[in-house]
Image 1 (cartoon, rainbow over the protein chains, first blue to last red):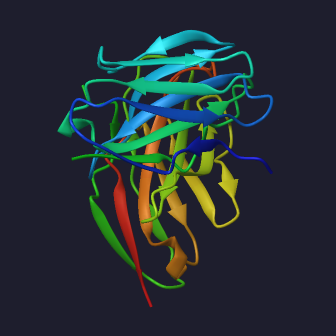
Image 2 (cartoon, each protein chain N blue to C red):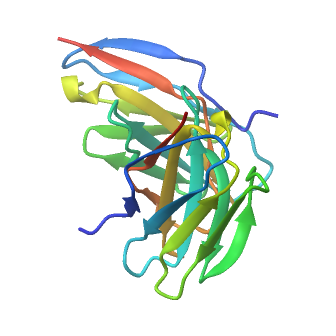
Length: 113
Length: 116
């Protein structure tokens, strides 16, 4: 079965640079979520999109923005990167069936030097 | 206030034995969903099992079962016949409300190590 696809798997950037993470949800899933997991931490919700509209917003810094495109893929744009942005970034997707879980991609590991 | 509490930072279990990972939650919403995810050292987040707040029976998925005690607000994961491949971090998570577009709130996780 198709899963959530994230790219790139690994990304190394320097402070003050920008980064773009991509997410391709499971086909026919209409909601996409972004989570940030710092080292030794639990995942923290950043932002979500339902049918290409932002549906919820969590602890996402103003330096970050995201959008969902007409083909349902989503991108997380990160600017003015800081050392503290080093983390594993997950994208997840789900359908509107309330019994269905969020399925996670394998994550993008972002390292800031 | 902590929404999801996992009080066991780490646990050991002998191969082929059963193990229970604890999870308590706090919500005033009568409609909610509880999830368990497994995160191996490679980092991916794998869905294991789901329990809805209105479900009458405890959820089961293969070797995984969920001991759901609504009055106590607990949703413990039971893994039967542990295997070496079960060694991983386990997260309990909650979705408040029944709309599947709602975000997940995670606990701090329990690291399980299965001994041969």
